[in-house]
Amino acid sequence: MKTSWTVVRVVRDRTAGLYLAGALVSAFGTSSLWLASGVWAKDLTGSDGLAALCPLALWAPTLAGPALGTLADRTRRRPLLIGLNLGLAGLVLALFAVGSPGRVWLLFAVLFVYGAADAVHDAAESALVTAAVGPDLLADLNGLRMTVTEGVKLVAPPAGAALYAACGGPAVACLDAATFVVAAGLCALLRVREEPPVRSGGGWRQRTAEGVRHVWGRPELRTLVRAGGTTMLLTSLGSATVYAVVERLGHSPAYTGVLSAAQGAGSVAGGLLTGPALRRFGEHRCAAAGIALTGLAAIARAVPSDPVVLVSGAAAGLGLPCVLVAVLTAVQRRTPGPLVGRVTATAATLVLAPNVLGLALGAGLVEPAGPGLLLPVYGVGLLLTAVGPARWAASASRTAARSPSDASPT
Image 1 (cartoon, helix red, strand yellow):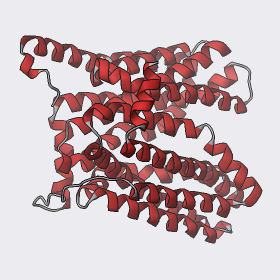
Image 2 (image 1 turned 180 degrees about the horizontal axis):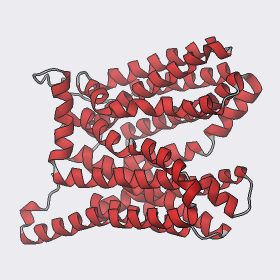
Image 3 (image 1 turned 120 degrees about the vertical axis):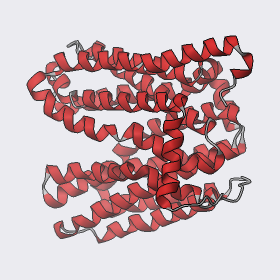
Image 4 (image 1 turned 60 degrees about the horizontal axis):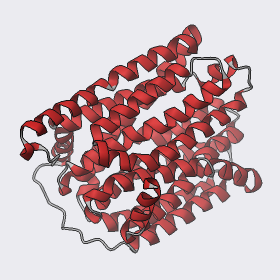
């Protein structure tokens, strides 16, 4: 009942409803192209390695997130978002020229620019939402956005693959371009009063450093971001064992789709539950609980049993949104408006960039060690990671009990 009220509460807000609709449309297009691009590269070149580089091309610009996020603080966010959406609509249409192995470089170039623009888009979007909705609605809105994007991932990649198989890569590019045009239109309908951007002194490097200093200079944010990055590192290490887990269960590699669906279902539920949990328990307790649940799920996944592995996948899907939404909401609530863009981008880089390292290390460890040994180790690491946010929450509670005037997180 509380979850239903949360959905109604957010959707009844015009700005929040339009924002969620835009997130849904954009996520559908991006997820469709993400899977189809790898298939496209494989068909053109016959190379598994080049196909695997497609998601890396999208992820790589995340490493420059702090610098890219600075763009989101230098202009009004709504016009910037509209321009980015329309620009990306034109960009993906360049994929019509990818028709031979010699043109596959254009596919990677488009994906790289796509990823860079997406980093700016996410930073500007976070800043715009912070200014447009009340602080009491932020947690619910962030949780529902997670539900929307994770739910779309259950539908959009197969849809993109089917469209590619039927009509080819350019058709998927057209679909993605159309979703960007629709997202731009929805953004244009937002009624947001934005203050003029604050022009701080110094060059690009100094403005970028301001975002980094804000994240690392606030102990409450530093604790969450550090725990979030460690969580994503250990989770990506565990993700590298998925094919070995499936083999232990006696299934073909295609069974990974079943495990992915179980985790996706957990993520959808996690997004719905995270908003109410954040309001009741606060960001640090919510993050600690999500990390601990993810750790227990990793340990359980080492058990060679189909039901246990499926349940552990759903539990991991439930736990991770708690961590990610807690970090984002804390950043939005504890950052001055002129800094939100670059601080959000900095936090996203620190939390998500360890994925790349984890996937690379995990691939090298799974052959000699195996999931039976690695997954419990990763799970214990996650349980230890949960201690940091939990201790911060306990310390903050003791401080608030001694001095009620210190209870406000801002």
